[in-house]
Amino acid sequence: MSEVVGLNGSSMNEAHPERDDEHWPPMVDSWLEPERDKLNEERSRLEREIAAAKARAEAARRRTALREEDMRASMRAELSAAQQALADMERQHEATLAMVKSTAQAEIDRILAEARRDAGGVDHVG
Image 1 (cartoon, rainbow, N blue to C red):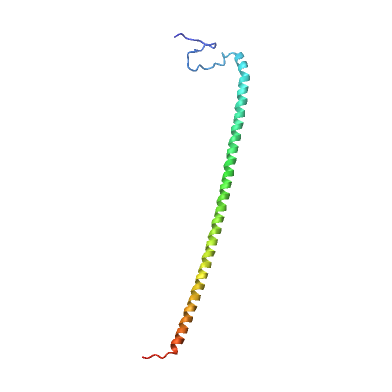
Image 2: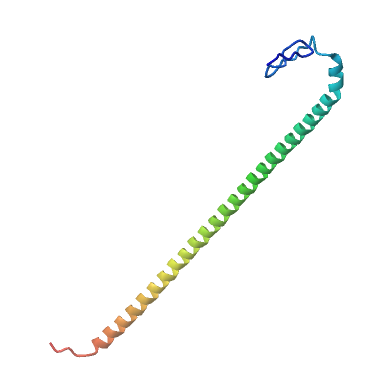
């Protein structure tokens, strides 16, 4: 294979010939300048878009976190209200149960007193 030599004298057979600014033709630089400017503008635009997308993503994460915290607070409030309602129902149930027991005991006492009264008038043989 024959050696191919570039304008700057370096071997073109190398995988990645390095640019030697000393031998780099200035006309190539001036020819590449508009392309380089376009690439820089495009890179800047893309960097701005990436920064904006990252900012939007972060804002979305913050909104989501706030919504989740609001939802948790709402659920805690609901749970607390349900626990309070259950405690109230249990107190009411205990009061009703106590009233039923009291009423039942009063009825038992009344029946027993009546039975004793009826039994007191009857002669016992014995």
